[in-house]
Image 1 (cartoon, rainbow, N blue to C red):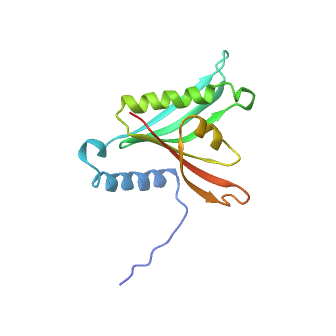
Image 2: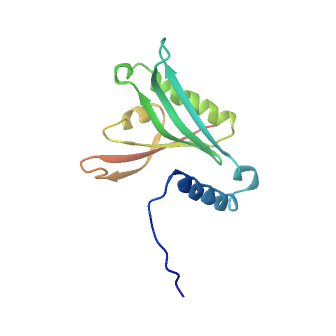
Image 3: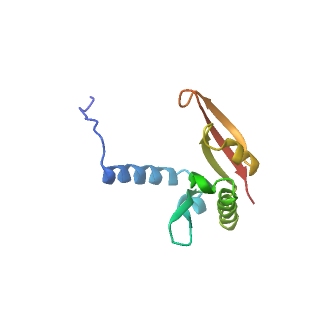
Length: 142
């Protein structure tokens, strides 16, 4: 017999609970040495005044790193800062025994930048958002 349930928007605490529960479930299906590996890797670039002008937000999960966000202030793009951030994350991945890095970007962002830095396109979603493409990239490390 079905129980009457409600669906509602969750708050931050409820979202963290749901994430924690999925992580616990996943840990039961991943080899023991990897099951508890989850770490945020966040790097910031600051100017001489301490103002953040770029950075990368990533997560080490099991045996890979997933880059969520890489951003460089527009006036500093094309000067190598993004590549330096990627290189640093790749070094961290090697140190931590990861096998690859994955990330995604849009056609209006930086697919050519990631190709230039050795990332291989593994999937593309057309019209996501409308008029654009959503790219998924991967790079082996080690």
